[in-house]
Amino acid sequence: MKNDRCCPVDSDMKFIWENGLQNDLNSLGRANIHEIVTLLKILSNPTRLQIILLLQKRDYCVCELVYLLKEKQNLISYNLGILKEHDIICSYSRSKNKYYKLNSNETAMPLIKYIKENLITGF
Image (tube, rainbow, N blue to C red; front, top):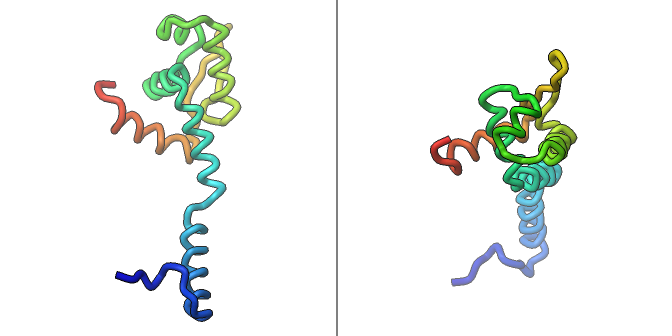
């Protein structure tokens, strides 16, 4: 069976075909895809993903995250810095401790919610 949409020779049909393909490409939203790919790279790190999932429950200070995740303080701080740099989390000071909380990042939050609800069981 011949597919009429594939590489037409007729110039009028080719114009329609090319416009249709361009519309398909434009619907992907290239800038948004780049942002999602960056976010997926960030979330692919187990420590960062655990931090984000914990921060969905409540705000945590660094010492609590160190205790919970059984990682060195510098590694936790490094990962918090990456999350903060990409506007996924923010921090505030209370007394002498720095606390972290999730931002309402429009791209990150739906993806984090999806991961939690569909990919992680029992959390």
